[in-house]
Length: 193
Length: 247
Image (cartoon, rainbow over all chains, first blue to last red):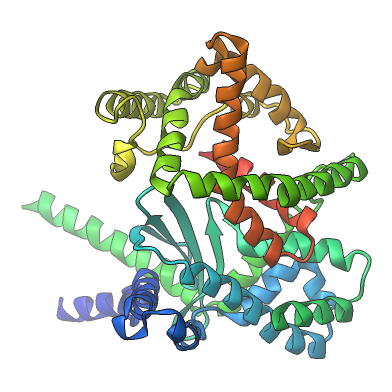
């Protein structure tokens, strides 16, 4: 009987034993960003730069650059050379971080509710949240992937609109008439603005 | 006793099977699941959204963008300067509450009885305790939240496709089905029964303007963050509408 129990423990689903689940990952990150935004020492316009730097460092590992890029390029991922892929990924990650930062800097006492977590497989999950402000409730879904120990975000959907899908539509319309290098150059301009 | 043993065996069997199933997928290359979803995620709308009059749409779109930048934005600056955020939110609450019959009828037509209940309860509470709908007191009651139903979603429910993307002057992004259906919705909207006509159009205009004012910051940030503003807006419109249809 003891042996049977021992075998049962071994057969328990691996995610149950591994550290951190998707929701706690998002929660820790959101809490950390909110802590920076509400830090009285960093209040005021003159500390805006420092505030942004700290948040940027915080969200550095929040996203999975390769997965973001793969999904945003869709079928065009395959026509990118290895070099172009290496060039594209950090630029696109930078863009997504900028978009995310701009959204968080507008923080205005919103409260984040964690509604549901859907584990789609060992490596894929979705975390459903609602951001509540005094006047609005905005549903936000984080799509997550786990390649090693930690979960990372590869898409964010606001009101059912996926950020990555939106960029995919735009990249498709650009790549229909232009080369990958042209897109990379455009992306570089955009992120240096 | 033997019955208990049987139950225990069954339970163990189920756990074992689950363990095996998860064990199996865990041993598969981690990339497989990702690859599969990534294949799916770009196949789903490979053909992009229907836009058979893109030339016309792009023309109207750039007209609208000019209108928003040079006509609406300056007016909005005066409007938002005059009415504080709370008052504008109050207007929004009032008009949303007033649109209850439209949402009710369309929820009924799609047999979404849970939504009928939620909408009716929200309407009653906000009308009675929210001073005729000026205060959205059900805002903090998640169990009463539901996505709004309209006639276009009803038509989708009965199998009608969206038709081509359509950018309407001033009104903005739409589809053939959405445009036709919104006319039907407006006929049962309480504002359409207001007399005289001048008051009716003033109220409808205020409703639209107030909503547009609330959406202006989002519009500006979409424009700023996009590479192809037209394509980005079209994609957002379709994703949002398809999301509503599925809820």
